[in-house]
Image (cartoon, rainbow, N blue to C red; front, side, top):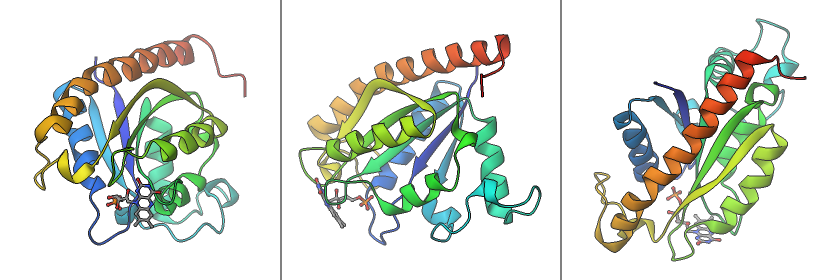
Length: 196
Ligand SMILES: Cc1cc2nc3c(=O)[nH]c(=O)nc-3n(C[C@H](O)[C@H](O)[C@H](O)COP(=O)(O)O)c2cc1C
C-alpha cells in the first residue's frame, strides 16, 4: 500500500550539504512505493513567523501557507531531516514547522539527523524529539544519524565509504518502523475520530 510521506529539510545555506541526505531519503521511500514529497523550507521560503496558519481567517492565509497546510493535513507520516547548528535545530526548519500546529496532529514522524562531524547531529535530533511531540506527532524510536555528511554521500547523492554503507543498512529498519506506525495511525483515524 502506498502512503503519503512528507520529508522536511530546512537549511538555507548556499553550500548546504543536508540536501543530499534529504534527497536520498525521498528516493528510498519512493523505491518502496510510497508517495513521497520533499518539502524544502528554503524553496517554500516562509517569512519569519508572524501569524500562524490558523491565525489567518479561513481562506485568507497566504497561498504558500494554505498549500503547505493542505499537504501536511493530507500526509500519513513525516520525516524531518535535521542538521545541527550549535547543538540545536536549524532555524529555517523550525520556522516552517512553527507556522502549523493542529495540521500535524495524529501522525507519526521519524528523525534523520546529520552534521559535519562524527556526532551526526544527534543533539539536534534530541531537541527535535520534544518539539515534534509538542506538535502532536508520535516520534518513532528508530532514527538515522549521518556524519560526517561529506564523507557519507557524494554530491550526486550516492552513498560512499563506510558511512554510506551504514546509511544503506539503517534505512530499511527506519522506514519499516515509520510505516508500521503510519499504518497503525491510519487505521485508527478511520476507526475512531481523534479526541480533539
Ligand atoms: C551555524 C552552524 C553551527 C554548527 N554547529 C554544529 C554543531 O553544533 N555540531 C556539529 O556537529 N556541527 C555543527 N555545524 C556543522 C554542520 O553540521 C554542517 O555544516 C552541516 O553540513 C550543516 O548542514 P547544511 O550543510 O545542510 O546547512 C554547524 C554549522 C553551522 C553553519
